[in-house]
Length: 155
Length: 155
DNA sequence: TCAAATATGATGCAATTGCATAGAAAGCAG
DNA sequence: CTGCTTTCTATGCAATTGCATCATATTTGA
Image 1 (spheres, rainbow over the protein chains, first blue to last red):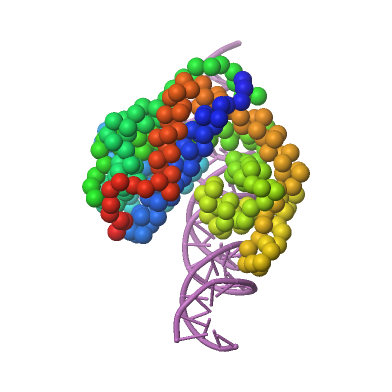
Image 2 (image 1 turned 120 degrees about the horizontal axis):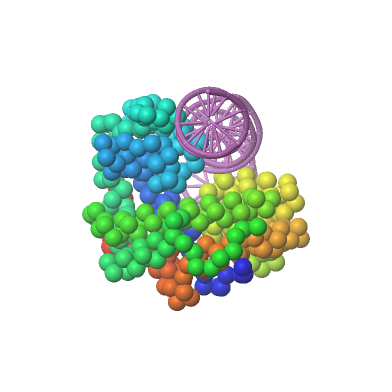
């Protein structure tokens, strides 16, 4: 296992910087509009897309890549705001379902009015459609599930 | 200003997820090896690359995209560990220089031994060199300085 | 069937981050 | 000069995150 090439390192640095820059600007717009952060949006959207608007915390975690303990407390806050509701999971009392409420659905919709155009402005505007496609494909290879080609483990 | 296409949204979602996933794994390896986080590394490297190993906090901020107050306190911690030293800025007493110490340089080097191969493993291994180049170029367009093509401002 | 291992979610506590604002030094307009 | 604005860094306090661990429920395997 060896050092990365200049090019690879550069891609990595830009990946992080670009993510930070764009996320920072979008978060700022959401906040300016009086909305909660992207983390809340991610949870709301994840639930909204799920059948019957419900998922277990584990499923949400894996989709949005949050830490278990962070999500647990984020759900506390969201539940306190009435955006989400925890309900028993039939057949396994360790688990639970988290279900989006009407208010939650509504908030998601209202946030999208700010969020969508922001994505257009910070991403869409900078690429031709084919380029965006290319970028998406390349980034898809970095997904946690995607298998690497070379072997070797940490440590 | 309008909604983003599916493709653009997808690129954005993957950008964030990929960054989180890779950063998470790299952070885990660093921690497992007894090292501090990537944020510390970024500051050390930024200083190391600078002439005479020194930069003002503002310069570091802009390079690594940290918040001013976070960097201020990160530097406190790093200074307490002897990795960095604050020295007066000649001709402007508002500013200061942050200078990397020998210990700081050494830590950067030792962290790279873990960090470099991790970049290879999580990024390099997943792309041919030309693809990595492509990815880097596309991501470069998202840099905060890069100008967007369409107009329209938030709000 | 029962103890050990595993899976899921919650929580106490320390560390970090975000927010608003302070404090100090330049820069600027008249 | 003098007062007003801007720039740069620090900080009090609240909110969030990370870490370790707990509590409970299920699964596994002898």
